[in-house]
Image (tube, rainbow, N blue to C red):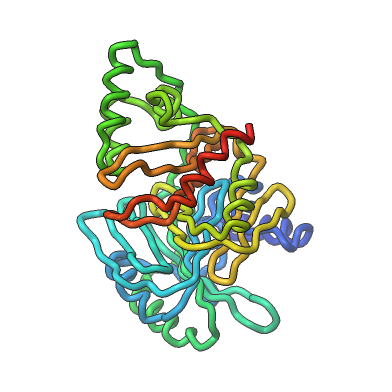
Amino acid sequence: MESATQSLAARWNELLAVQPELRIRNAAQMLGVSEADLLATRLGDDVRLLEGDWKAFLKEVQRLGRVMALTRNDYVVHERKGVYNNVSFEGHVGLVLDPDIDLRLFMSQWHLAFYVQEPGRGNAMRRSFQFFDKTGNAVHKIYMLEEEQAAEAEKLCSEFMAQNQAAPTFEPAKTVERPEPKVLDAETKQSFGEAWKALQDTHDFYGLIRKFGLDRISALEMAPEGYAEKLPANISEPLLKKVAEAEVPIMAFVGNPGCIQIHTGPVKKVMPHGPWYNVMDPAFNLHINQEAAVEAWLVRKPTADGIVTSVEVFAEDGTLMVQFFGKRKPGIPEDKHWTVLADSLPSLS
């Protein structure tokens, strides 16, 4: 009798026979399963199940040398090449702080991992470590860039390989829905505005909206005057074009519940491809599904270093797809070139 895993593998192969270029995430959506469920059908020589302390694993990734880090949500893919230097943890929150690989890690979401080998370009083998949450949704992926990394990748795989290579099971994914808009009464809204104006750090914004029981979009809608302005939903394209033309370095944040990945620096080659708008630079790729963007805002937050300006793009379900900032570090004011560029964006409406 055919097992559920064998049946799923057969359905996936049938789908690939018709659409050979279909990406695994899209195939999983079409088949009504998770991406990790599909990978589990190939457990064996080309896919191996890993287990263990992911904090310890991430501290060992530096051994691999220069790799490509990939973090995504349903609407945006962020790819950055570099080395996993300066990995640290405080409780379940981790940091990778390097000019190239810059991550914020929320380890309570990291459930299991696979070591994956798949055909790449030509005769090359594409090797990666892929991490998933309890629903089988991808949290973070690490890709080798050179064939010479194979031996060290195999060694790292063997150190964390699960003894039981049976297909794991996953919890059903929860449907993400946009929260019901919340409106504050006049007195509370005034208190909220005063608290916003008193911010000293951009990270304090999360605590601010929690304190007032607001989702992010409702908070922007009730921001004090001059601190949040509505932008065209497709603002990512003109923004990235302007940034590339003016050679203004930026920070681009893309995340999911388990990981936020940050690019800091210039962008140069920008281009559309179907519904996606893309950055296609040698060390940094960004892919934004423009059709998914339904709302965007220009946001200003006070800090001890002055106003910090960001552009935030949202999907219909309320997901924060991508955030853009000017290049900056704590203790240093925002780049004036970014401020001028960002301030010009509302005129595009």
